[in-house]
Image 1 (cartoon, rainbow, N blue to C red):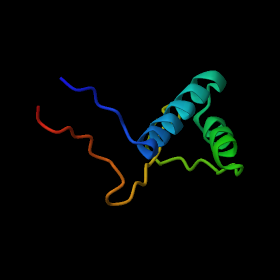
Image 2: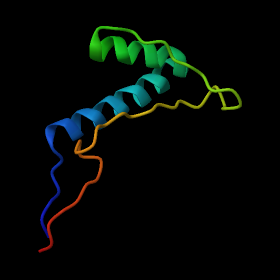
Image 3: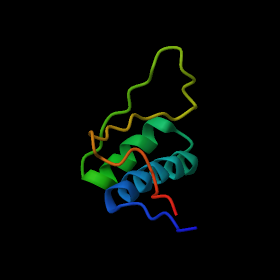
Length: 78
């Protein structure tokens, strides 16, 4: 069976998610972690927007990947 290797932009998206979760664990605050992570990734700290009724201790995010951006991982049949 062939090993699946994600494309560079797919790796980049997954790496940014890992950074955010690790930073959330490190600082213990989803808001601060989001700001710190976006500042590190894009030199621009973006404000975290909480959702009413959503547990404030649980980090969340929205991935915006365009059509054809590699959201579906597939492999060719053997």
